[in-house]
Image 1 (cartoon, rainbow, N blue to C red):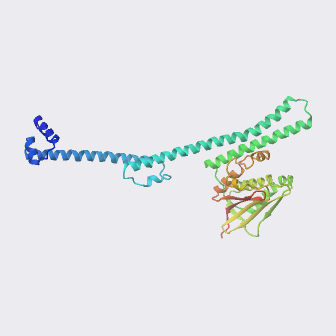
Image 2: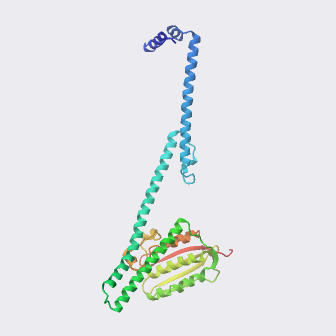
Image 3: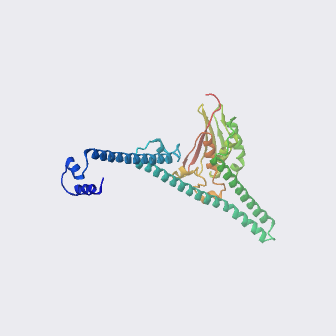
Length: 337
């Protein structure tokens, strides 16, 4: 097309006159054949540009879908859908990134709280040990009875420190999945009797009566005897520690055929209703001052929860403040129903 023809085309466009195709051809100085070729070329270029744009959009959409799928196919519900446009894919990707940031924030809060709790639990016995030892070192003329008393208290705090470290190691192994259960069939009633016998000294100091109730029957269960012994010991020890003077702690077994239900009940101080949902949390204490005064790592009930859940079961608590508490959990029976 010559320059003069382009000028004429511009004039046709600028002037508000309705031109017929014949008049347009005359103005441009084109034959009908040339006009048809121009029209075909224009349509072809339009289709080509459109196809290239669609191809680019599909590639971008495919890449977005791949990015979403790479997040976590098992947990991200978004990847189960096929997105028809880029906007939906971008929204899904944004939602995924937002959830990641929220999860990182939760983990950071947990890490900060966990480290703070561990530091607080460890420094109490450490400072006590340092205090007693420094007193002994600063006064070489300390009488024998006072010396033995201070060293005895320092040793008691060292024992508590060791228990905290052991409990931290245990719960870390459970949460990281490194602790494997050794499940074997065993007599749960015999284990309960062993645990009760081991708790008699602590119960005697508070004049608490230990009782075992188990209707006649089979109490063969499938589980890790050592770990379940730790659960029973922790529950029994807590019952005694927070029990009333001259109270009682009752271990009760019952069978449903496929499972054996274990209950550890007392008539102690109980747990306020608003705290029942948190008693299995690490380091959670209903009464921080009183609980630290009675010892313990603050991890006993959390360990119980991990052990029971590792067996595929659940642990629960029912309690009334001032009346007592009942902790219960189940273990799979090893006897055919």
